[in-house]
Image (cartoon, rainbow, N blue to C red; front, top):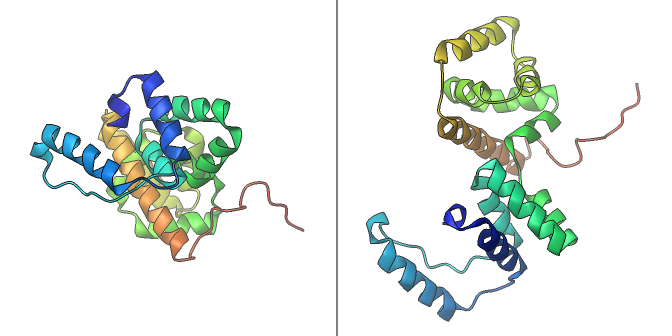
Length: 190
């Protein structure tokens, strides 16, 4: 729904949602009723109260990159601290560059190779190289061949595959197998 709103309204709605601590159940009920009448074909609706920065970070993660960028810039202009908080709660596919080789290997072990092939097809050479370096030489060659053999792919398919990989990364982080926090800019003694 958020992506279907005009940019100005989308930014304002997102900023207001991020500023909410709690939503009255009565308001949620009224909103759910209105939306329910317009979206009956989608099945049952959840009527949970959900708002605040966590909800906004999840929503913005699911938007296309241009819409997400616009929203975050608007929020940061209105409230820099809130914008920074939302950014910290978000995770985008390019954040995989922050993972070390061992963490990438953990992710690769849990991700379906077809999904990885589609996700990497639509990303930067830097990201491809980062992921391929964690594979065996033969595995990396096979992945490159598979990407070439795919031909053109819809952006929606690429983004869907990337979201599936992000879900795996979040799960591994929740389990404590990998860590995304503090991996950028750390210094080591050689």
